[in-house]
Image (cartoon, rainbow, N blue to C red):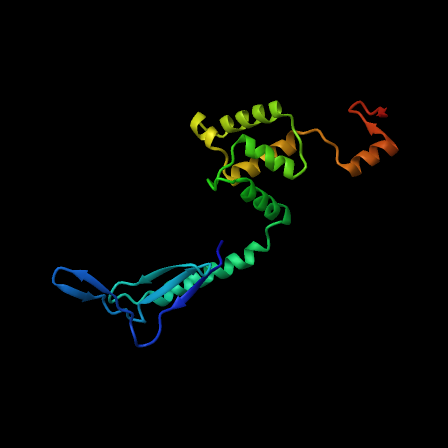
Length: 186
């Protein structure tokens, strides 16, 4: 998302536009290259900015934006592949592009990560979680944000009693000790 590029306005020529008015046409004010810059969002849209006259903060603003972009580039590699995959799945399931997923879409996310719950369990868990984080009925219908979805998945993972395969092999081979110290075989 932060694949933004900064572009300095350069050259001695300034773009001008003619606007229609009752008295004829007027020319847009001169864009001074020392005060103006553009932010290009993924090569599509641009945001053209100009500092106020007499304010020499353009280079400081550009430096801060460059630093922000470079820090993002360094930090994005620190995100785990599981989170990136979950983000991809979440975006794919959010068909209406509302940036939220309702409980039916959440069921699709769970299915895509090979975690299956009965619909009744999912419905009850969704409502309980949504109430716990303070969502009213209207917000529950709209759905969970990505961050809320991740929190829900962490809660589901924490609350499930599934045994990891490596632990299951250990238990099968050596048994499992109960709290009273006596071995219990499965």
